[in-house]
Length: 313
Length: 309
Image (tube, rainbow over all chains, first blue to last red; front, side):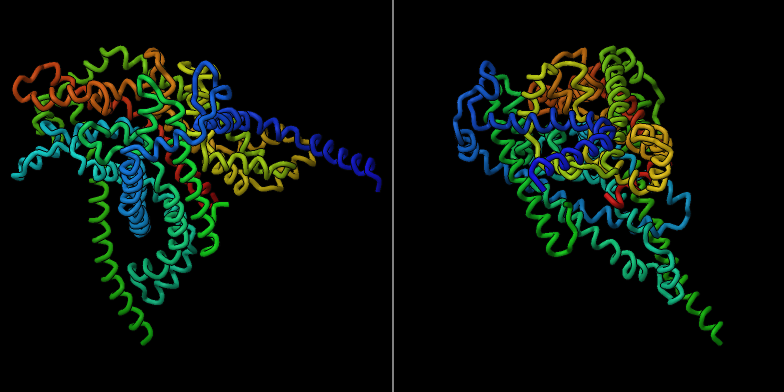
């Protein structure tokens, strides 16, 4: 076949594909525009991390400064503390928060009364629908040193009132505890879906063989949940350095900085909240974090694919 | 003979199961108490006398029933301005989000040239972003900083929701329907609007709740993108009322006032304390109600999406 004939064939195929698919592209277009403008434009703009951003020159016109801001961040006094705080907040959150949804899902699956079961399932999802601002507000109200119900209880039991929101030692328990309260129920969804997809004949056979409920949990539920739990665990490891910035921001006080000073909040306070915002410096910090997070996810995904043949992509 | 053996094992089983069921029931009563009590407490505190609330005498039911807090809240016009803003952002934004997500999800559920690339490009945004500052500068350069538009178009499409919707369409709408429609001469538009949309009630409900609640509760977008108080969504004003939630600015003076107020407690401060509970109720009820009403479709739809997702 000659070159021009080949090209004609190719062009014909493209034309047919367009004729067939253009309506699909039209349906896809609004979403694509969104991703290009609000996700890919900023990725292009991230180059200001390597420039000395001046509003007058814009993103592409400012002077290149190489790794200046990265060096500034890594040599800054609080860099180590921020990495440690970010990591520990996520690590403890995973350690305490991860098993609870699995336990809830198993126990819910064993509930007898259909109506009570439905009520329980509906109820444990409710806190998920509360906003972060309200959650933080509730913490401030309940844990207030003078009027809060928690401190009233402590005092009534003969203890001394604790200034929870100003105590560095209480930042993580408050943050993680409220996180569990708010989302443990919601996070059962995946596990409940897995449990309801188990063939009921398996339970019937187990009952005939004389298995108790506890036996069924151990020999049917847990083996079925294990692969998905492992996958979730691995995935969660991928977000060990990401942070729930708005919640940390809302719970941060001048008193608990020693533990609440995490990278996400620092980026916000240096790049947005500061009266003289340091765009390039804040971008560099954000980029560091994103690159590290991305690397962890890739690594974890690769490992997961090798070991368990479960992977994201 | 076999019959008796069978019966005896059944009795033993039931005994062990009875213990388990009792433990499980206690477990769930505890869990539900932990989950629901804080919410209940907010509710009863909002209709109680400020003094009773401050002295933590409101524990199980309202004490000295009073609507003082709600009166204070209803007089606070800025709250209602922001309430209207949030209703607007949520309704318009969610409507757009659901339509755009559904259309894209349908497109991605079909085969077409270039699909792999589109999928990759979209998934990639889930794992990598330019970061807060480049996003902020991008919005500013587009001229959208401090506008109502940005409150609508920011976070317009969530990759996760897109995946859930695509999985739903792929798994619950049979491909034969598409083949039949094409035989009858339908293009993608006709098929999408005449066949997919009417069959997508469940997923539309799920997406509406997801997007609606996320927008209603969104605090960060407004914090970053707005300067003009007239444009503030509810959560920003709410944060100021619940007060002293940030590390910066006036928080510490608030704390001092708080700590000192044993000495000279002011009536205003007392009222404000109960008004906080009322604000929480007023702001949270729409999101929770939306969930409770949609709950029936919701649990089903989320399960379908999450199993394959």
